[in-house]
Amino acid sequence: MTLKASALSAAIAAVVLGVWQLARTAGMLSDLAPTPLGTWNSMAKILSDPVTIAQHVLASLRRVAIGFAIASAIAIPLGFFLGRSELFRRGMDPFIQILRPVSPLAWLPLGLALLRDSELTALFVIVLTAMWPTLLATIAAVQQVNPTYLKLADTLGTPPLLRLTHVWFPAILPGVITGLRVSLSTSWLVIIAAEMLVGGSGIGFFVWNMWNRLDINAIVSAILIIGLVGLILDHAVAALQKAVKYD
Image 1 (tube, rainbow, N blue to C red):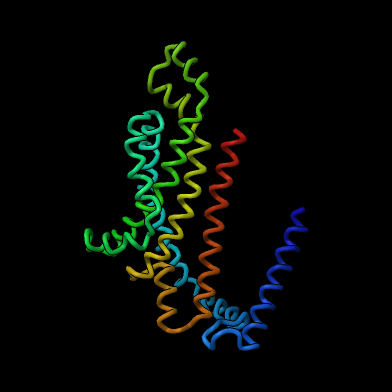
Image 2: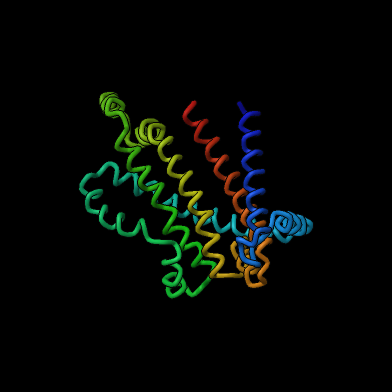
């Protein structure tokens, strides 16, 4: 099955590249449009200096790691509390539903006005956009815990701390990791957009810098690198999620 899937992926890629080249050759795209060969050469040029592109990617990953950690530290405890308290959950729901759909780019001007620092603004935007998937997943996971587990803990007189670590935590962990997976993908998506505006360093800044040079082939190459890093991050969390489910 894996071999067939790989062959199908290769066939799809070949068709896409063929249509792309035909569209460019037929003049259906603008003169600025990239070409498969130009993108390939641009990727080779970028990878010929791996230190530079690695520095940009690592700068983005560092921001993502910090923002994601802060978002998780807020979302998981808050989600646990709201999952257990119907009153507070109903009271907080309007605020969650209003803030959750706000575009990451809409937070950038506010972050710059409040913090006056591009680095902190990038983290600010990550936190405010990445916390919602984990928050909602944690709330749902708490609500879905089997009541039998809780009744058994009450019957045995389990202390609150042991109840938290031996009953609640194992029960909600798969759901929480599902939320973390979405939040991490959101964090990676957001930082690319944020770096285009706040500048300095990062793969998003690299893309914007290439646009200023009108090097569209380099932009496509950077998009491929962004997608590859996102794929690796997602697979890492997916592996953790699978391990937790199996355990």
